[in-house]
Length: 288
Image 1 (cartoon, rainbow, N blue to C red):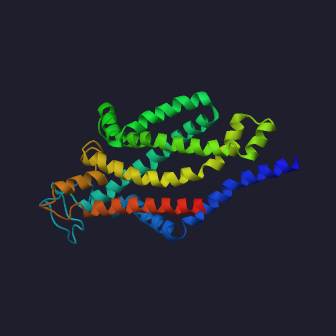
Image 2 (image 1 turned 180 degrees about the horizontal axis):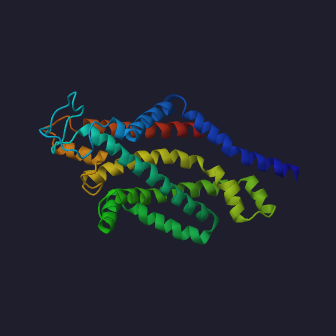
Image 3 (image 1 turned 120 degrees about the vertical axis):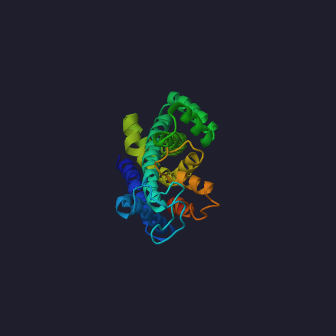
């Protein structure tokens, strides 16, 4: 009996140790650089009402496709709007999508993956649904969702969430299948613990490390998805700005205003690179 208790305590201590290791990875090297990049972009988005010299949709008389200048740091667009202001407000739109849709997809997918690992009947159904979602390229899925919901912020969020569900579901299921065979989990079952208690107390806490790494990676992918959808005209509706729609407008005006898209592109690059560096740092810490 004493030996069983020791094993269970070791199993319960593993999640906090793992989380400490992952947290420490974000305070050094590439993890810290990634956090600084993402944090800087988040801060710009949060402070957009204070930093933007104009409203995102304000039309300025005589300011058609102006180059960067002290009055307009990133220039103006084809309908006389300040690009810096629209970029700052576009960051807010992307952040709402990334930090809402991806975690929701992770929660739904993780829940389905967890119950799939415990009940064979549920597993058969969820795995076939995951196969169906994964069979469609993300942009094809986006077009299909747009056909039902129309374009807009909600559609982008739904596409990102739906695309994330099978990724997190399969990841947590695979991790849970390994953890449920551990000695401390078997000991809990032998002592009469119910399936739900075992999942909540042992399996889930010890299966979260790969999910945390994937969360950062999926956030970088979400920035790409928003950009691609807005570039194709099925994302955020004009005149509301998003980073993807600003890049699309910049490409259209490339010959008249070559610097138009540089600001939004730099923000997208910083966000994607930041999330990737965070994911790499977490992945390396998890492997140690």
